[in-house]
Image 1 (cartoon, one colour):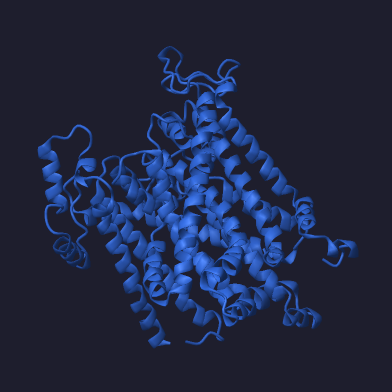
Image 2: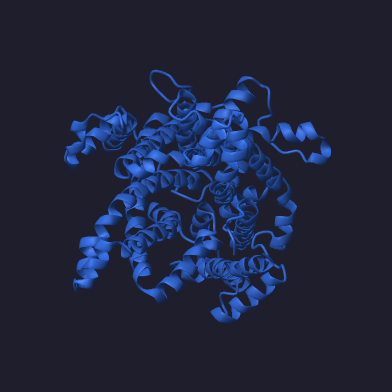
Length: 290
Length: 313
């Protein structure tokens, strides 16, 4: 901090964000990769792909070539097309789980932060749920429901909610002790006004950071669930599914597993880079330590 | 001290209680009839009725829960729907490879990640630090099964120096046992290592900025003595905490790792159970893994009193 020129100290909020972007090139890289992935998912039909479900037994297990960039799987389906379309599932599941679990966790977190009785009961339940490893929790839910993308989203969300609740609760409890909140209470500000004007805005930064990490871990969890056969149904191509189908033949047809695996890793890396960048930009105190 | 241990031990009871209630009531809370879903698409009405009876779905919730809880407390985890064998016996048959894998991973990960974090904090801002932090970001992003296949492609199929898959009991020789665990341990441990290295670095940085570290350096103490004797010792509590919490990563990862490397452990048992929708097995595995997780974190809590004499209960 000491090396910063004096002029930057008075820069307004927007300038600080821009400055943070300059100081965190990895976050820009993350954003760029992510944007490319989203575009790729949306424009999948126009990227030289063929029907990802088109079975063609004559052309099964072809090595990557000019015609089949990523080769073909054991049913003769084009791995390139399947991988590009697979981005849709991964990104949709990641985003949906992040949004849903933040919304539900925020709701529970605010309640536990304010209602003593609900706090004792809800946190006991959350502690119990948190002692179940998230993937196993999702597996249990998937074993009892029909395989569908919606159920995958719900299952992963349920596994993530306890952690968000805990985060919001700790933020709320910390804020309630702050002089500006006490002052608002003392001056007779109405409850919902305090909640909306003072509490909620302060949960945005930590939840934004947490949201990106949840998105990354949800993408991995979806892939793992699909990979072990408890996730997205086989008739929808997802990165986990494609890899699951390549499992039995991986020693012969490495490409069926390799390409979706690389795409998944890059997508998760991009989301994590954005998360790290956001954390550094929004919480400089924490950033110096991490 | 003794009173503290007893109190913490008692505090695990409601946690495990919630886990038990949750895995049990899932059968009732999930939309649709679980008996129909478990029976599968080609089941007859008779099959569905049989499964419903086996799961006790034909009797009142509370009665069934009471019976179930009572049998759990006596160590009876129920009967597998598909094989008709007791779940506790199925788990018993499969537990050895899983313990071997997780313990090896734990040892390897901790003994590599902690020194990495210490070195990164010592050389903060330099290339060594950047290397470790880069590893931490990548390690957190590469899913276990993707890394697992990359390792197999590289070391087993490419270089042909390690076996592709399988498991050999330690009774059949130490090297055959170990060589089949190397790649699985690396794959399983990578996220865990990234997490530990990151927290170790953060915790060490915090301690290294303290006055007593400067004093120790000023009086001419060797760097390794300052780093390990003074700094690491005082930075230990968050590191031990994350080692305990991170065990959840290992437990979740076992399911995938055992699938990729064809290790006949509890993870494989779980995956086979999902494909057959054998819910009693999944229930038993979750109870067992959650209990292990709670127990490990109980030990972590107790270890604080030894690590940091300032902590009094």
